[in-house]
Image 1 (cartoon, rainbow, N blue to C red):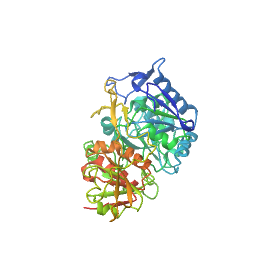
Image 2 (image 1 turned 60 degrees about the horizontal axis):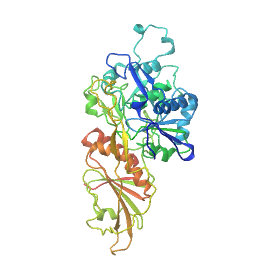
Image 3 (image 1 turned 45 degrees about the vertical axis):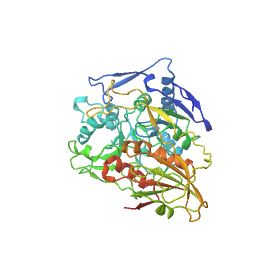
Image 4 (image 1 turned 135 degrees about the vertical axis):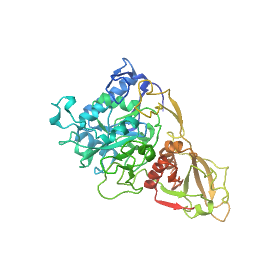
Length: 467
């Protein structure tokens, strides 16, 4: 894929990738003393900038068509559409081939945009001083500490609702977040409407963390993909419900339960999710169906895998992928299996994998969202590990029944595992393996580990405890 500032690439089936370097789109002008995206701000687009032109083209499509646009956030790539128009939101379900009975997350670019969304029509005549704050008090400390960022909150909708009914799946609440990706914030701001945006993947498949992942799943189903590099976090946002007593976590993510309990009103926050697909009406996005699953069977292991145990789960003549995290070595199958190194690696069309891509890494803030001086750093390289090839003999007859083995080691660092998980599942799937053996994590290592295991359990056909 050709790189270059503001480069537009025509790709298969009419879907185009528009590359955007957010540092080249223009000037961000803030109207509050804290220079925060939480307050009111404007974007003055740069003249004769390919990056600004690409961003404006995407915003115009969101305003004027019913075809969704894929764009990067700090978590995963989202598939955005105008959340106030039913025909636009239905375009999301059509592109993803996803059931419409699962609610969507709304993405906003400022608190003023959110308050306008939540204000009942009859209240607009009141002065600002006489209006009741439409954002419940329980969320104020969370917003000041974690927004913009990977936290989604559940909010009550006014009557009548300004949102398309397809957004909420007939629920009286809506899930909302403010992404910390400056590119995402700029797109929402230019579009002038809140964007409904689930992950930009085909329904049930692993979430996309690069533009190439989106193209693989949605080529021919959408027109535009904004390419801002690889996503820095790699797993979706934490979803919380502060309207219940006590408040609860509906989906785990990068914001831990310990971090939430440090906030006023959230000292007793509990957990209200399961790691499997739930039945009945979902309270929030991502709770109902099997998610994050590649075509290959996924087998999730707890404990140390050895070749003897692995034989029980291999199919004769098949091929496997191995995803190592904390303790499995890259040669996890070697001690008791004969490995043939002198082999020709089969050709697999995986041009989107094993590459270094640029990303604007957003600085974390403990009190307010990124300011104009903190909004982005210089692009950093995010390395997506490539699969290593070998062959294993699963029979007692040496040289017979060799199977292809593709191994990816994400390493022990939880952040790296989160960032590379979906890319690794996709790469192994593109190797056309029959099954993927995944080394699970200890849920007690923190909420990021719990979020990873939540996604893996939703993807896995079976979980095997070897401890």
